[in-house]
Image 1 (tube, rainbow, N blue to C red):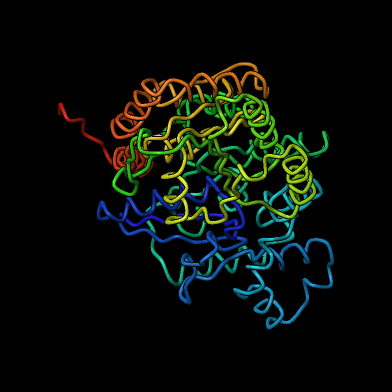
Image 2 (cartoon, rainbow, N blue to C red):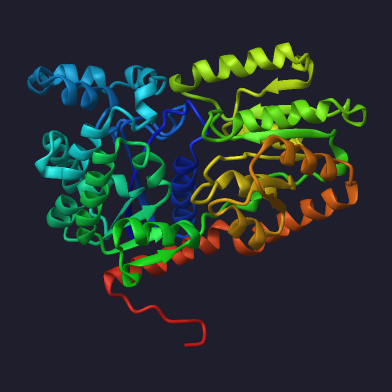
Length: 437
């Protein structure tokens, strides 16, 4: 099967779960013998730009569409200006901009993108579709998230193939908008959903959320969990490590970065935990600078700077180095998440997770068995759980091994890719036989 994945990038400035999810699916589908083209939008997917090539350009370059949306004069700019704005150095610079990763202030652009051929980016949409027609012949087109639904009608109209759309954390983007814009966006997304053959939610929890947000019928909605390949990760027993607490995600307020810092401060006040360190990774955006500056100041003022490490590299080898250091990981996201691929990356590496009982966290941890959840999501409670876990080597070891086994059994990327192919086949009208048949 020939599959096209259209994926927005983050430029590698922070740990992007959606980028990782899509790239892991692409790799798994290719290993299964399918032809998959990865088409990046806005920004490169990763910092080292290994997703970019001369053959496949980045469409809807972040700087270009931003300027064209705000300043109409750029819509008539010569082609060479577009090429300059969409060049690798400029896109890499754009990944550091605050506006490239937040919705507040970008309501008009979000609506315009969802309008598709009726929006301000109609010319870029035609350029993308023309390129696909000239260079690819996909059987299926897969959109990374519902904020790309403005592409669906034109793609299906020109390509005459099913359009599939993943669902993951769209609410995080939309629900921070001002109320009038928020309502308009959800209504527009619901309308554009008619051009999609099937929606794939990353968890049962989020499927229920989006059914309510977008009125998606059960017949068009399926849950397919995120997966990872255990062979890509090194399992290291917790007994072979020092007692280190980790954080791996974008270091921001929404992800509860400060909650973990405060929990660590409470823990370090107890003499039995003088050896415990905190290792932090996941990157940030321009929006997070003031917040992180305050966090660093607090760390210095509390006298714990020598016990806190900011681990800068969170891609591939850097992530593996991080996972080999830490004994337990917590990302106390304030409002939960649709999934959280870092849970799988930690558990498959033998690192138990401690998460708030929010979003899909209970669903994922209960299935895999490599962690614990807690209520409420506050520093004192988190500190107490970390204290209990770090004081119980046997329980840490049990969770460590259970997590690895649970991911291998339930979240192997090969199994999830097979489920994805089943969705594609059903959209194509290809009868899928069960093993019993």
